[in-house]
Length: 297
Image (cartoon, rainbow, N blue to C red; front, side, top):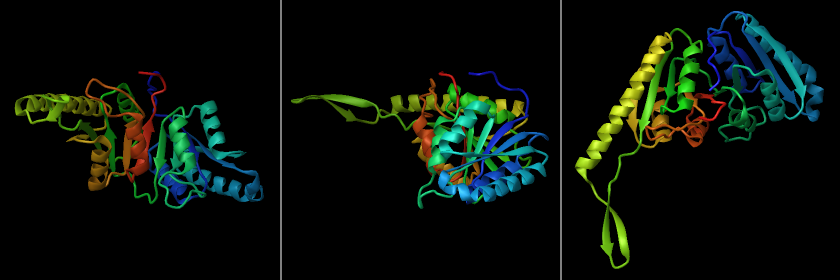
């Protein structure tokens, strides 16, 4: 893992194509209590067929920069000719921002899709944390970190600890235990050994209790780390399919922002693999901050 930065001064890359989701991303960024002078690059790429609209695009980028400057941020526009995904990722690789903020869908997104092509590629391949913002934006009142105890999740925890959040935001931490274990009895038949599920209450209860103790310990340690960072939070412990349980809580509690690691493994029967974080980005229905761990665990 790369060394954690101690300063709360962020460099930010904001995608801005004036879509509803991009405007939501701008509104979210305005709500973060970022340090005065924080550097924000307001970025847009365009194709040759859009060349006649360059003046309009420049004006739109400048409008966004002016809004951010009113918040005390050091915002400047970047308008480039080329494929948006390619240009966006190249800029991120060259400038190494602390955070990318991008709308879930752009102006040219196909109707009915949940995450546009640019956002999907950026969250998969960007070399830094990516905040995918969904419209409509209603503020950052409920924020939830999901963790499985992996190095990737710990990286997300440390990142959240230094991320400036609105003073009135409520913070939650969620861990999902694996589905209940089903002990197997092997019965000998004419066709050979056949596994038959059965309920061994003693064995299943012991394993379940052990998992609950480990899961609660993980939550307690995570909550303690957030308290030490000045961000008190409350824990949520569930059992079942990770993505489904998380999305149910998001809906029930009206979570505005999920924070997750991008991949990982853990001795606590890990679930936080790429497939789970990818499902959260696509289907959770809220904004999602994906904190990528750049080095292998």
